[in-house]
Length: 123
Image (cartoon, rainbow, N blue to C red; front, side):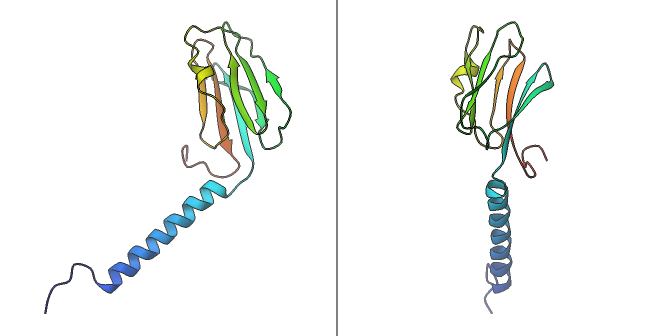
């Protein structure tokens, strides 16, 4: 009798594991419509913004040396401007998905987008 590389049971187990992984991925990606952005300065959360509820532009200006201007609108949040020399935070663009983040190091300001459910990045 020939040795088979995979038996029928091996294929069934692999298919069940693949289906479970797909279900978990979909649950993580689409399980919650609510996304929340946290703005923190020097490690302390100073503002929490419900991005799923923001439609009109809302501006935040944390009191730091670089005077960053943060704008939340249409379900997104971004650094609009900053007095920092390299402007990496501004070039990061709009944040809207769970796990997105932008940092202005000279201002010690961080924007982090979190979801309503378990966050696989920090769990």
